[in-house]
Image 1 (spheres, rainbow, N blue to C red):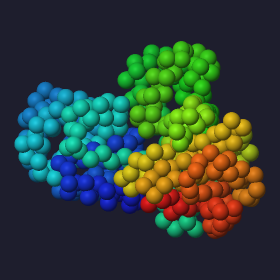
Image 2 (cartoon, rainbow, N blue to C red):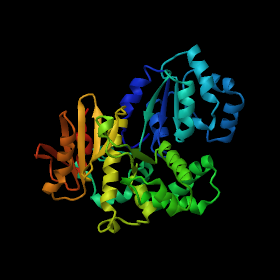
Image 3 (tube, rainbow, N blue to C red):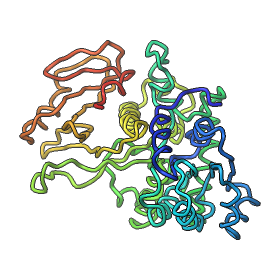
Image 4 (cartoon, rainbow, N blue to C red):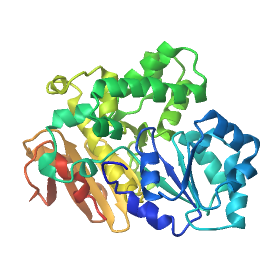
Length: 390
């Protein structure tokens, strides 16, 4: 049993009544297996990380699947890349809803096979590490901001009470470097390690492939490939620029965000929360945390609405533009606890570039209860999810 309820559980349960397959993706150690086992306790379980199971699934996939007429959780299915094609045949033959629950951490392999073989037969659930509201249902119980930024949200750290620096360092070496390096066949470990650290230092910034390549000492195309794999494995996310029409697209370069603030802080070399108080990149880390919480608020409710950012010719910016069926939600992110009039300048610039109405948010680094100022909901960082639109 897992210790913390996951918001995605309701969507997965509903999809399992509608689709023969539910595929749960997300970074390693985000809680996929624990969630699947808790929701489907009567299903058999098999992990394709185990060599004998992997060999069986690859060598005789039909016999492998026939072992589980009553339903099965197949963990790390990307380790048997041929299996989705046989799953297609099996669920077409016996389309029992919720029969197969698949999990996979290496989306760059998994999603290609799913999209090719299982289109229309599987629901896709995206599970990121804990969100603030999952981990701390009572906002009064949320620790201080520096502790949260330092620790991050990977479930194992919180469930097992692990020391964050140690746990995240082990995560980088045992999962991130192993998985990514296997796929892109990196030989020079030191160069890739330098790339990860330099990339973490750019979280919350516009992505400049040439500059990053020069600093790492590899080509622009190599950096582009590494970035795409890290994004597909849910370690980072690229935020595209928002535009109301092509003629008003003012910035073409995406912004880069790590999807866990603790992982970014670990790659910076931060070893305790106190180091963050005067850290020059603390604002970028706070912005990283908020953006990741916005993604969680969507993914963990079974949604995948477009999320982007806005910047005009004068450099005025809003940190995120969330598009949904009920219109736009436009948000500014400020790590300061005191609200200054200049914090609203980006929202005003955005208003000048659109003719439609939109919801305005300002998420700040204090804990003062929500209030309204300049037609904007001013929300503390502990209340990000409740501020997001349904």
